[in-house]
Image (spheres, rainbow, N blue to C red):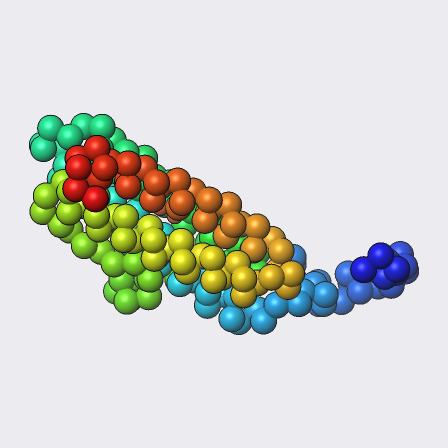
Length: 179
Ligand SMILES: [Fe+2]
Ligand SMILES: [Fe+2]
């Protein structure tokens, strides 16, 4: 890449004026935009299902003398919601529309919505969901490669948080001696 020449100013300026309605998506965008939008919408569905599952667990764990775990469920739920917002924002930036239709949400999500009865089962289900998210984000990062580095960086940042979530859940399980 060292001897690759930078585009001259005149060409850059002329190119930027073409298809101006495309906003942030310029002619040098290299990824398959439809595939990226589909992928991001699947990730969005996953985040929302995870936010809902964690919220359910937060409210249901409250009565079980498990305040610290419940509090963590709420923190995770809010972080998944934050991830959903960032993904939706990127979808719009790429000229797409975030699919928030509740009827199809759980079918499109990679992770499942499992209510679980005991606190241990809640933690286990959340850990499984995080592990699913980790694997699918890793695959998405590889798929994007150098073709859409903004989306890739976003997913890498989210992946990092999902790994932290998984670690925290696994610590909880170990403390309760049932991993
Ligand atoms: Fe997330
Ligand atoms: Fe997570």
